[in-house]
Image 1 (spheres, rainbow, N blue to C red):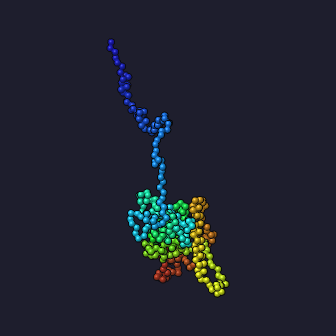
Image 2 (tube, one colour; image 1 turned 30 degrees about the horizontal axis):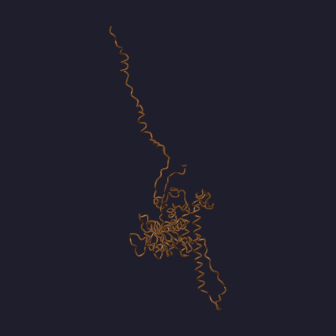
Length: 406
């Protein structure tokens, strides 16, 4: 008896379609490669005993290089001579400097018009060098006196302050921290001169004072010393005389219109506005009705009067410098405090009469000349007349209608 094999199950298995295999996650062996590798912990030290080490006396000491100090300016200039030999007059860089009077008190550069000023600082070659020893420079205390100062860099757009003595010319770079408050004020004044020069040189026509101030406010508004465009305009107007004196002293003329700066009306307007805004008043000598008696004779001491006038001029200059210094301090204080919420909004006050003029009260139309709304072309009076005798005129936006039409 033969056994028959059951094929139902096998047939059903063959007939069923093969299901797609799911993509199983990769083995756990690849997971560590994806995860961030953590650093292994260092093995703990088992021996905490101090080991003796021999250090030489020379290695245990650190020698600090002190600045080379000289007493005479001419010696410092010779020691800082670069690779290129100096021309007729040596030029040097000046860093970590302070300008002071004979007593050693720090003074702004503008005080040179009133009293003698001297320099204390590090003198370096004019061209920068990779040698650290040369970049340290030679320090000299109280040399000078300062004969004059000058501003350059008009074409480059960045001011450069030069100081001149009898021996050399010095390019002022970085002042000492104690003198920074004085030098920053003068540097911003020089920068204002540069910006005015650039605006006037690029202008095709004569700009107005408002246009000039608006352009300078946009270019100097990014400075850390000004809180906004309004403070820049006030600063430029307060130093209008200084800017005018610097630009008219230039031998160059503006590029576009080939006119000297002294002939530009906007510079004169800037100077006049600065004079009007000046709050200091020069003292005037009183007139005495009496006469001087010297050695039993009546006369006027002319030499004494000239001395008095010179002293009064110095007092006026000193008062102006003190006023500029106080203004600079107040401006920096406003910058630190930040703009107030009210000051950032501007309101325009309009008079009621101005509004009434712009919007008059309603009224009936009043014609000033004889006007005709309609013209009757054909009427009984004109039937017998010749067409050439009729008045001639031109119509615009016209239409024809009879009298009965609405």
